[in-house]
Length: 267
View 1 (spheres, rainbow, N blue to C red):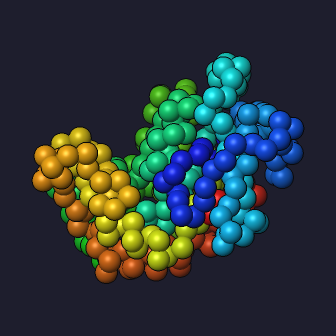
View 2 (tube, rainbow, N blue to C red):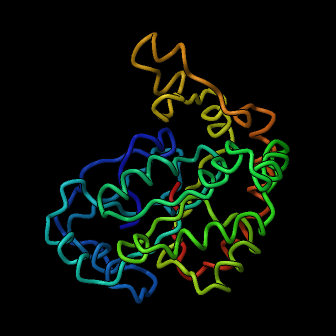
């Protein structure tokens, strides 16, 4: 299980049925967790077909939405799967996480949500975090790493497995997780061009009543009532997203160096 199909990554990728019933090749890197090897080797995987401007070297595999129940049964008997998914702001992490957690029952843990909860509560850590977020900078490790560690070690995460969304964002954050013995089975990196990312962020809106994310162009609200209450996150402006993208690009290579043996890139 690497990437589940969704239109949210368009125009970076598009998805199509498998052209052949032949089983896919085995993974290119070893994984001690049998869950991951089982998912990678199952014939219900179908290829991602890239659009003409995209390099075929980024092609990965995804699990079909109608995968047989035998996979789910096998997962229940094996060690819980641990996944980190990363990418720049608006690269599609949220939609991918929703599909993956629905399919496999993993606990979705977003460091961004944890931070925003602290900001909304106006806690001391939240006030400090907001100062950095407004500048498009990384929140210091000491504010975040303990919060993430404690959530990963809770009972539901240990029993069901977890999907960590958008964290770590620096080599020091990754090292902090490693120090606590927290390491994923696979690290997924979503790679989307900067122009597309800026367009996605600037048009993104939040429904404060339901928590649902809309986009003014690609996923508009269903009616005028919803449209009237939509809000824009304070850091979803062009100026701030470009600062965040600079920070992301400066740090992503360092993070990849920690997980180089378990990294899968999808563009």
